Amino acid sequence: MHVLALSSSRVGDGGYLTAAVPLINGFLGAKPLRLAFVPFATADNNDESYLAKVKEGLSSLPHELCLVTPENGRAVIEATDGIVVGGGNTFKLLHDIYRYDLFALIRESVENGKPYIGWSAGSNLAGRTICTTNDMPIIQPQSFTAFGFLPFQLNPHYYNVVIEGFHGETRDQRLNEFLLVNPGVPVVGLPEGTALHRNGDRLQFLGTQDAALFQQPALTAIAERKFLSPGSDLSFLLQA
Image 1 (cartoon, one colour):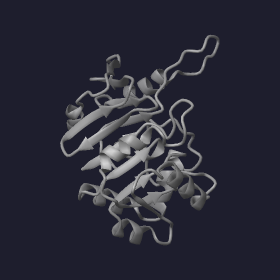
Image 2 (tube, one colour):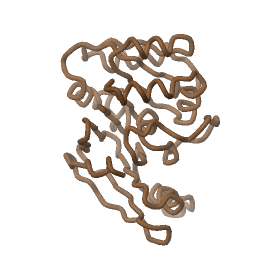
Image 3 (cartoon, one colour):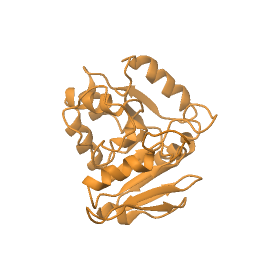
């Protein structure tokens, strides 16, 4: 499998997909490809506008983006060379992919060699389930089960901050809650501007800052947070 899971579409004050372009370019190579773009993470359903925005962000690359719609989804995915899944609300994205009967097709296409690129919500779907997304469940999908291209959990936009006087849970506390009821399932927190690149049996962490790996070996154990430096080989997580 060939998978690129990007944490975010923007980094800091940078432009839309600006930081992602070199990572996508290195992932896909120079040969022009036709790519199916899945826009369903947007709550306003303005898919044409979303496509135009992505096309502008990736305009320096030689690839053609083809919009996936409820009507043409299967035909577009079958006819193109790869799959791009944009960010937005993870629950809406997975709900629509199930609703339009595209889940099995996308999963099988990637398992059979088509490259998969996702950012934010699109990256959440690359993992086992969407249970470690940051998004509000604005709609209920058929299942929380995601594609499983990466056999662990992802948390894009990872950022753990403690605010004095604020009593809501931090990101680390919320991820620890997941680990308490799912012991043994690793979670990778991806800060903005970072990505995971799977090429067959090899998994590499890309970016300019550390990611966080959370693991909890048993129900009663305290979750361990380990920092991962850019360039780290994470292939061992493919056995998760």
